[in-house]
Length: 263
Image (tube, rainbow, N blue to C red; front, top):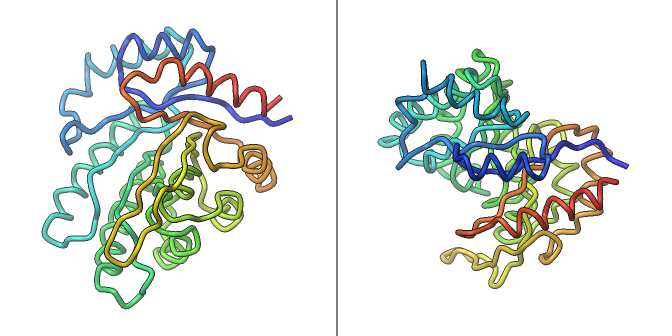
């Protein structure tokens, strides 16, 4: 029915790559930062070894994960931007065109000074990524899709995109993932396949509480979500993300779940 490649998010660990190969997945999204820093050894022999680990298992890199923290502080932004640029360089070395990241919560109030602070940092990141042939993909969740789309429209940077995580929208901003696909359609370059439920909604002073769940057990309407992705012409990865310590069984279930829907 659909033509979406499937992967999952993991580290450069033999057991995790073996799992992807065992499940005959198309690729993996790789975690890159270590304690907020880009790896300094991902070059030369280390890079060649890492690329071989992937090619030996017929895996491509769907994206790198480059979370460096929120870009909402003019004092810490320069260091975080520099570290992110290192991740962009590594992405190019892995022949992947996407680095996903969280940028912090975009204020719903355009007059909030944090808004311009985030715009400035993201513009520098986007310009650097574009010149390297990479898109930096903001992960959905803290704010609604409408707010994020407005931010990206104002940013107007060809290096910027979106990593659409439907569970984050359900769990954190109480937004509709299906509508979010249509709202953000011109920016989506990568997606996560994740599920969950909200427990308490966010307030002006309190963050939401939520629970992440195996695919099909949360609040994401995956049949409608995949249909929406197909309608906008998305052909990229569905990257399984399960944020528990031992996620092997749930990765198996998630791959089977997605294949059952893709047809």
